[in-house]
Image (cartoon, rainbow, N blue to C red; front, side, top):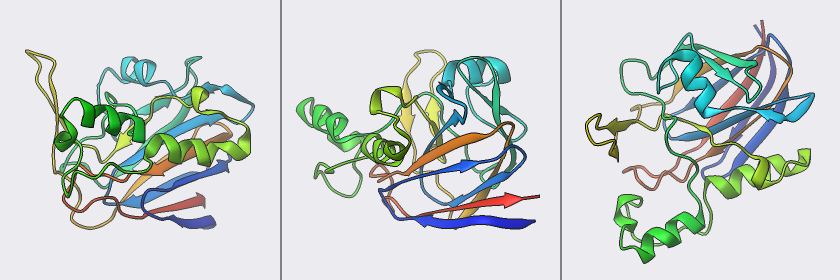
Length: 209
């Protein structure tokens, strides 16, 4: 396969790019990635958590599953998952942000989000995705709730309670997503303050088969 683009997003930053139908987006990381996608011809038709879960009959995104848009269009298909067998990819939570951390601090719940220290981050995934989508004219209010790659959650079926875990890959692994149509894709390299390692860099490679 031919490399079309290869870049690295630093910890707690955003990234975006156009990708053509049939191309493969390879994300390489061992940290949480908040990932979203938009139809390149209509940014209003973007990734939808609920419709994706309904289409795949699963609350997690797994190999072979499709990411579905608000109109029901298939945007991407996950064809390789280096996290398979180690953990799952979350589609329950939204994005972390300074506002969320400030609210948690006011509620005395900051320790649930921050592992290394109790210092409120100046920004998070909401700010990173807002910055990444700004060149395309997409404001924060039009950015959908993401799929949180590598965010392994424990979900209590009896109570509906959700709990974060420390499960992450020990070394960077790849996730391959095939574009089903022309897209704009974006992600945040999460500050991941709920983990022992904190946020780390994320590699993004667009491949032409």
